Length: 279
Image (cartoon, rainbow, N blue to C red; front, side, top):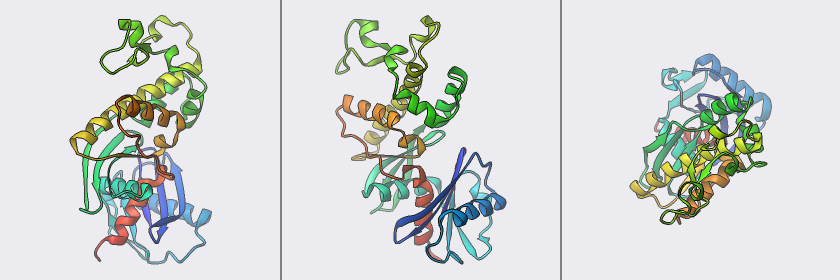
């Protein structure tokens, strides 16, 4: 089993044969603790754990303050897994690739240069911009906090309603950037008295998605990674995926991989690390 103590969500998975067979999540749980571990395991057992006996199973723990947890929990051995390794193992396994920059889009964003053949999982870069940024800005600008609701609303709008384009600023494009490319995120807000909520949601998603995409492009280049794999809950939203794909396309880089199950990738990676740990 694997548990990822995230800042906003704690995920727990049960894995067998290199595949996830059960998953549960608890939103805004607080810091890692024995009590929280007990409660999230109970969530898993009550919701979807009919397959196999978990008694004595290893539990890989990562994220938050999981390092403060003891070495054992009841009949379970706890394996403390570095978060970059958990992110990388989970992302590579879900994408079914051996080498990539794994971009974990959570409350913030972390990027790991991952190579399963060399067993190398190193933090390469990141940005403080992520799902937490989207929720914080949306709460004060749109009166809504749920990132999934903001991302859905964004699909109904047009970021050009609140962003400034290169055409507006310069009268044309710059280098390989077309006139329609964003010059200033939310650059029109100062002149708008009441922007359309859907356009504002699209602008917020564009701001967050473009920032993550641009940082990941540079990180992959520096780390000599052939491709990028995006995981985390933010990467599950189609509005975010569209923005990221558009940035990669704009720079002539092959589109990143968005694997199914991206939201539980880090917990899955912790489970995989626990399975391979030496007793």
